Amino acid sequence: MKTYYSNLIDNNRKWVSEKLNQDSDFFNKLAHGQKPPVLWIGCADSRVPANEITGTQPGEMFVHRNIANMVIHTDMNMLSVLDYAVNVLDVKHVIVCGHYGCGGVLAAMDTKEYGLIDNWIRHIKDVYRLHRHELDSIEDMKERANRFVEINVIEQVADLSKTSIIKNAWKNGKDTQIHGWVYDIKNGLIQELDEQIKF
Ligand code: CO
Image (cartoon, rainbow, N blue to C red; front, side, top):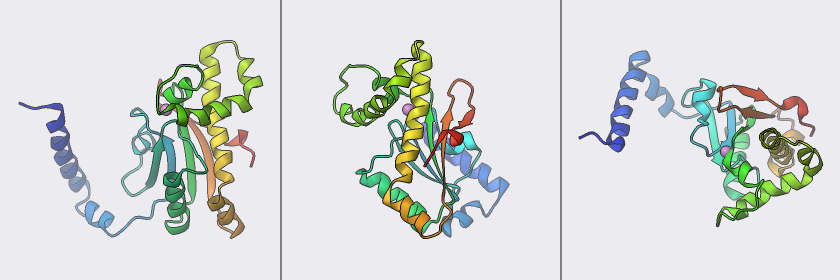
């Protein structure tokens, strides 16, 4: 009997043969190493798969994901990914991608306790506090949550620009470009917020 789990392995075998049909050298080329042009910092949400929504292939995106696509200056995991991406892989673009309906962002709008994750959500609540006037003035709660998602991305990009890694890259003349995006789960579309971001 096929289980959901065993389908995963079957699907992998199908995917391998499809890739090999298209390009018999596909895996040989990837085995030589990676030179991705993009670092993706996104939400861990299962509905926002970096490669799939951007039409990119293995080898094109270095990926870091956490709850609510946060850039926290003491997060060694994120910093290590960022340092490796910028200084070793020499990515040209770093994209922070949030998404409407983000559970982490929604959780930061209420006062419920969720357990350990409250410590992570604390950082998102700090973003709300910084933008309280704008957010509190939006009466429709859905609209308010959507704007909070956008503002959170803008703040994470600003924090990204203030990491020692990005500051040093720019000081040393690298043209690493950083971007803020929001993905709409309801229609699959990405919106660029770059024009709203000031460094
Ligand atoms: Co999310």
